[in-house]
Length: 167
Picture (spheres, one colour):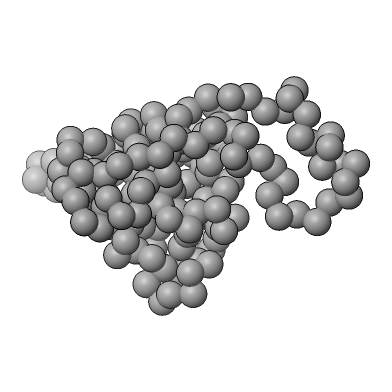
C-alpha cells in the first residue's frame, strides 16, 4: 500500500516538475524562422535542430520550437506557445534565413521588439560552414509593419510614423 502511495506522489511531483520546466524555464535564445511556409514535409525541423545544436555547443540555452511543437499541431496553438516563449522566457531572438516571408516568424520578431528584446538574423553561411554562428543585428527600421499588406498609402504613412517604432 505504501508503495502505491509513493508511486502516486512521485507521479504527481514529476507532472508538476514537467509543467514547471516547460512553462517557467528561462532561455538565452528563441530560435525563429519559417516552418509551414517552406512547403517541406519536415517543416524545416532539421535546420532548426542543427542550429540549436550549434548554439548549445557554444554554451547558450535555446528554446527551439521544432523540439516543442509536434507536426500536425494547429498553427494557432503553436503560435500561443511560441509568442509566450518570446515574451516571457527568452532574452533574445535569433532568426533563421527566410524568416521575413513567414507570418509566424514576423509575429515573433514583432513581439520581441515590442518587449524591448534584441533580435538577430543568423548569417546563413556561418552556421553551415563554421563552428560558431555569426549574428546580424536587426532593428525596427528594417522590419517595419505592415510588411507586404496591401494597405492604402494614408495608412502606411500613419504606421510609418516615429511614434510607433523605436531604434
